[in-house]
Image (cartoon, rainbow, N blue to C red; front, side, top):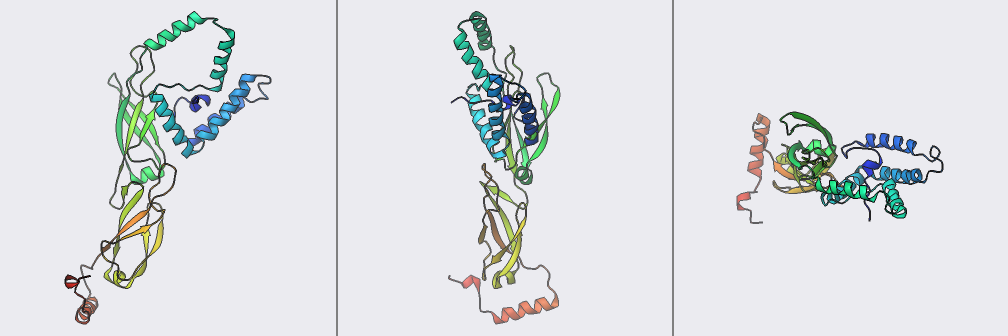
Amino acid sequence: MVLKNYYKILDLETSHVSIEEIKIAYRQAAKKYHPDVNIGDSLAEEKIKDINEAYRTLSVPASKRKYDRIWNSHFNKEKKAFTGAERKGALLNMFLGNVGQEEKQTSSKQKKHSTKGEDVETQITVSLQEAFFGMEKTLSIRTQDGKTRKITVNIPQGIQNGEKIRLIGQGKLSEDGGKNGDLLINIKIEDNHKFKLKNQDLYTNLLLTPWEAALGARVTINSIDDETKIYIPQGTQSGEKIKIPNKGYKNSSGKRGDLIAEIRIVVPKQLSKEEKGLFEKLKDLSTFTPRNDKI
């Protein structure tokens, strides 16, 4: 199977592009190679097929991320992807024989002797909200000559903790005219005071009053992107966990994990005279003693 370089097909120099930039590049490429403009040009017909195929894959965020992972794994193994025009050119060379073969061999040897620049790896920390909703982040990278250059990185929605973003050609320069190295950005998602991320689930604390826990209640709980009402069963204990499905973090395919709410029963630090009287009355009436409870 030949892996096509969809970004090159759309005349994009890097995979670090937004969906809107992909749409613009597609419209320009489709206009340039449209059959009505290139009548009888078989290469243009092949090109427009590749353009449409590239757009179908890259215009959907989920399939774009999947393609990028596959491409990066092949790229690391120094496998080469061909566009439709390049495959056509390869077929023409087969039929034309060894025309210019010596020149091609010389060029090939030169390419083999050139080495790719070193990859540069760094790590950035993003908040849960930034990772969940996606964002653009500007990095300051120090170049080989000691200067600093700024790079804007698009953090896609639902990026995974520990996932790497590869910026092709943004690493160190080759010393003998080869390709530049790549910049690998390791993503670290930072928990906040409200949510903790474990795999695709989000963990949070749900604070209840003693009477809500004892009598049961319907309460509102906030997730990372909205709020929902849940029922608290009568007699709920501190430390119990309640699972709210599909309110957690996203996985690589866009599906949501769960929101896990751990119950924390909170008593008031200050009581009014009436509240204190009610608690004293409850103390006299109740026979419940948790320290002697054998259940």
